[in-house]
Image 1 (cartoon, rainbow, N blue to C red):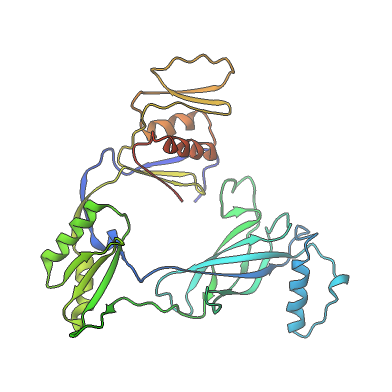
Image 2 (image 1 turned 120 degrees about the vertical axis):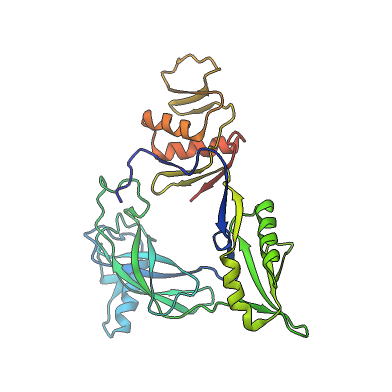
Length: 343
């Protein structure tokens, strides 16, 4: 997908908040099912003279790598700008199996000018326990500054490579928990994706109405479901996940700063507020304003919405970064009538 250079893409989920039915599996996740982060240190090779220059990390790493393969290298006599030291990161999804492929992020550690066009040889990725869970390898696509400007995945010193790591070791995951009482009971813990008391209460009511299992909520906000028969727990858990709950669309603004996308749930409004940023002023129409400093001026209705604000800023040619900063400032001032989430 071609990313927008200087225009925010605004997506409206709905004009106003309204009740809708969602399945429980869309509102919660099994608490024990989670992503796990892995990372490692490596080298990018084959750079066109844009690698590390003053830092010795890359040279030391290459020297050790070649020594392991029986090729001695005198580090002090080796000079090259075709290599760069990098840090590699990845996320292993729940229940990923050995042999599955995952995306990786590669970032420069030293003073390399660009990683574009380089190649990452086999790099082990470690978990917090020190074990190797995946091995990464892949090419860093040639950077086209004009075509890919504004994309986090295509910056010169930070790259995302799709399916570049292969999982070598599975992360242990559990679904059910058993207590130590007699007779033993089996529990399924569910973490709400959105911590809303009203929605959580509705989830409890729907689960308990269905039975024979019983649900309660802990002080940590976890929904705990007790199954009287362990042998039927798996089938009953699948049944619970398919139950429907009536919820209201939240007043929420989600901003993806990498792609320049703003997604709104409901018609999120903005209270009366004035914003001044560099050569830009934003204020409601009820205010008077003299353009003494020849600043750009955005006039909004007294009860403006985020949609109207973003449209006005786009028409003025305000950059994606500045629009996101403005939304953050309005939220910090308490004038955004909803929740702001920055990805």
